[in-house]
Length: 220
Image (cartoon, rainbow, N blue to C red; front, side, top):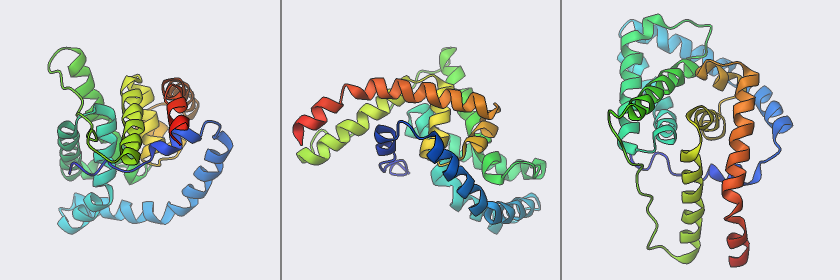
């Protein structure tokens, strides 16, 4: 599962610095497009609650990559991200009967993964276990790819330096594509608080990534 988090969503972080209005329009469009999917997934969770394995597999297929990627952004460890993903879907299987349709199924699933990730971060702070972030590959690559990997690595380092709530907000909205309202629900905060977390996170990421911009221009 080590290739699940690859991709280039970090390009958006480098270019989208004033995106409030665009995000609002995007959220409104997404809300309309996901109504039918959410309704379908409510039915799937209800089937899972009865022990339906096929419905469970459909939910796993739809959300495993996203849950693993989000946990990796939070924890910086692919091994831990795999454990969080496995525990998330184990809890989905065990506790599907507790799901209340007030929340979208995807939001409910991400909330489980968010809480599991936060628990692990808290245990780290308490000294239970220190897990070093995975080393990022790319030391022996063609120059163009190597430079791209350098930028990706810089983003990973900048993300890891964010406070956990800001990291969660960025991960949910920018990487997993949740709306501000959905991300706020996952994190158990209001939308305004979520937007404040995003704004602070973007400022810190801008500052961290600004140091890499001159080098990028000089190589082009």
